[in-house]
Amino acid sequence: MPDRPGSNASSARSLALIAIAVAVVVLAFAYTAGWLSPQRLTPAKIVNGLAPPDGPALGFRRNHAKGICFTGTFESNGAAAALSKAAMFAPGSYPVTGRFNLATADPKAADATVRVRGLSLRIVAPDGSEWRSAMIDAPFFPVATPQAFYDLLQASAHKDDPDAMKNFVAAHPEFAAFGAWATSAPWTASYAQDRYNSLNSFIFTNAAGQDQAVRWSFLPAAKPEPVPDDALKQRGPDFLATDITQRVHGGPQRWTMIVIAANPGDQTADPSKAWPDDRRKVEAGTLVVNAIEREPDGPCRDLNFDPTVLPPGIRVSDDPFPAARSAAYSVSFNRRTAEDKYYPHTPAEGAKP
Ligand code: HEM
Image (cartoon, rainbow, N blue to C red):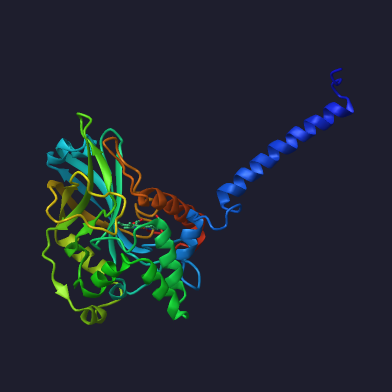
């Protein structure tokens, strides 16, 4: 016989159903947070791993914390439209918000102490589509997978254990090439003289629906002038921001964008391996930096240069990095914006100091 509504058996069944529903939700949260699989690599773990021993700089990006914002345009010559139907490859001029930056978690690091420099871009097309890209000047990434990046962070955090880095290098032979680049590549005294590379591989799709695996780079118009690193140390701790501000006041600074097309069979999943130099290159246009913007409270502050924000015509490949980066950048963005009160805001013009 069915239970009467309001009977003890019916109430017990309803309570049991509610308890099961709550347990399922709690388990789903626990799974997402990684509590059920402590060995699983989560975005929060990676971001925690980026923090220096005395903790992160609150309110700042958790990596590439030091930088300077700019605005400009991307002048497309139309040549890349054969490879991608992305709206910003049609001939024309598209607004850019970007950021020169240094690969450090310390916003006060002296410029001469940071080996890797970056360029971040957001290019917006009239149809509202956006292309965000965050590139570095190294020709390849230090490691082959996001897990290996986390392992590198862990190994370098254990400075008191001489075996930690030794074991890491033994387990990740690809790291040797990056080490050789870092110790032998010339330093320049200007963001304007550096080449910046996507390193990650993406898929371009053209109007005919044809796919092409690509990477891209921005090549400086300014001639690179190598400066010995001890000479760089003589310059002030913020010489890069001073230099780029002066240059841009003197006139727009330019980079040529090249798209590098993979040959059939080239691997796309591992950014620690450069493709051979002879791959087809298409000059897509010119990045023109017209104005340096304030870094604190400027237009880059609340921008997340998430490399998976892509227009129709560009999509991620089997390279695992963009998805891992997107998740980590989002954690970093959420933390830094929630820490607003620690960020060194600039007083509004006319406000009392
Ligand atoms: C798993 C690998 C990586 C992790 C976990 C990681 C993590 C991060 C984090 C947390 C930020 C700060 C984001 C924000 O608060 O807005 C950042 C910024 C940045 N990263 Fe990565 N990154 C990774 C790989 C890469 C690669 C492969 C490149 C270049 C090829 C790169 C270039 C940059 C640049 C240029 C920025 C500065 C972006 C900006 O100006 O806001 N990163 N990264």
